[in-house]
Image (cartoon, rainbow, N blue to C red):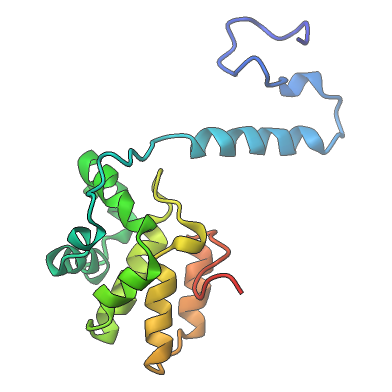
Length: 174
């Protein structure tokens, strides 16, 4: 441990304080960003026991329309405040539902509703415990749109990159 490191420090013992690095070294800034990113990402958790056992029950039309309304009413920026803690836990399971199940549930929705759901899940994936990677519901929703001949336009693709860091969006692993 570095001698200037105070035992009452708020940082974990395995972290080296920035003062320990000599000026001009690039890794001190990188270490700080890594530590802050790791700390920010560790907030919240998903408890699989809270999720419903039957994924088909989660994909009821009433729930899908509720999620659609968050985007339709332009409330995606307030999503974390609008969802209750119970909903955040319960609905995080939506991110792990198989893509075939998503396609079956969303196939009958109009194009506008598919786009609303796609935007909802792109933003929701930023909630703690909602990370989905290649299992993101955005992927089957985008595939349904593509099968219908509706291509995602450039502004929407750029928006997806701005609001989400999931490298698999919108069309999944290549």
